[in-house]
Length: 195
Image (cartoon, rainbow, N blue to C red; front, top):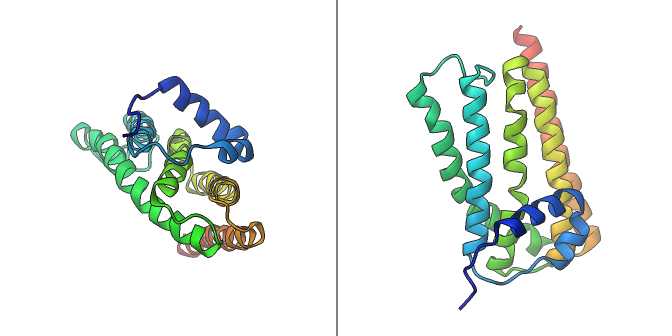
């Protein structure tokens, strides 16, 4: 049976290492140990994102901030917590498929651990949630930058944690990077055409 003790200090260190030293982190990331740690990580990241979203909503800096009442605003936090758990496992399945494409590990636990590690971007994206209250384009550009960095982290995870083929992982990363860029460009063009 896996050790179910949760070390918050280790989660903080892991989070910093994922963001600042992804190659080193994913090279040494434990691929076994049960599902408790990934679930706890996802809940922590979800709680942080939810609190930040709630703060931006109360401050009126979120896109929906001025439209909804206090009772609905708390749903930002609740939705972030629920979304973090659902996102953890959906992300794990998507990463498993991408890992299989790259010839890497198809072990669901290892892919779930990668998914939990990549969720460190959830609160970072929420940190910049105020940008939507300032200007749509600012929020879109910040979201694009976070997404592209997430794809870079995914590339490192596919190659170093899941032992995927580097060249195939590069192609997957490039294809995945093109999608949000095209979406942003089309959204900005459509918005400009409407206004």
